Image 1 (cartoon, one colour):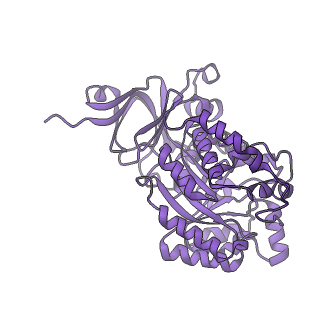
Image 2 (cartoon, helix red, strand yellow; image 1 turned 90 degrees about the horizontal axis):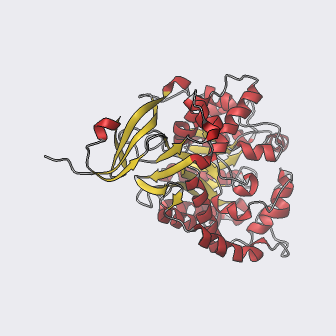
Image 3 (cartoon, one colour; image 1 turned 135 degrees about the vertical axis):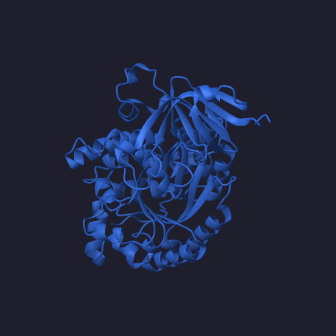
Length: 457
């Protein structure tokens, strides 16, 4: 009997593969490359990774000749605020407190659902072009973001952010969003409860969030110990660190994704190690450099206690970019400098953070993060023929330290091609840019003197 056609076969590529049974550390030997390979995709799932010669005669609806290209798991942006691309460059060269209080939070008081939709659309275009197939978003008016995700074809882990200053309605809205959109976009959307941070959400609300997470089987996505000042201020005011606040309110008893964590102290490590929920941390190093924070996410210490660290960009209002490729290179370089050890992070370890660890961070470790049978077909094809990537002596090092996001030629999510040969297929960028530009005067007006919140840490 002639087999039914596959939906997609990618042939002739070199495939980044992870060793079977890779469940823990980021041992660099667990990543390897299979040359002259083919990936067979059916119903959005990788059916097989085989030799190009064996796939040559297989029937398929669509075939991509990827000779000379590298097939990688799609990158995951583990913490961002996608609609904030609309604020890219409006608050530059400022300390954190002024950045929030003088510019960003006054401007965000003007946000409409249409602003959020257009910002999310532009952000998704940027991420697709940079090889990002999934992002974890923590923002407002998230129904609009979910609609964009469904339309453009990306995968996303979404949470409606809230402050205690909103009253119980903020927490209730976050729960309603999470329940309404869980499993949306044909399963490409997962959801979380999204309290903003321990300095804007009080202990009662945090404890209530933990209870809701347990009751409904939802994870939590939160900023905590973003920088050392926050940790020091929390100790001075309350006698506990932000991480210890998460512990005493029960948030470490549920699955939690902690954004940034550059203020995580040595005393926090046993607390995190003893958590009964699944804990992960997202690191976005470009923003830390820009804000001149004195410390970075303690990746090595976290990995030593078994906590996955995923790669992120934060929002483009602070980072100016949603380029996870850059985050991968910066994480490796900053960790070498911080640890005083050129052997950490290696390029293979950085690739592990960009793929499997990032997938685990957003709760998708069994679904994406590697190219293997049974995994969702979230794949990017990278062209290393440019002069800046030649010659290739060490493929992992070339991918991390020489390649750029612009070397991504094709982006595929759930077996659907979202970008082919650098052409976006699901988003009309010029139309988005035109409409967003028309809305800028109203969005950027700060004459009203309002803020959505006060930064005081």
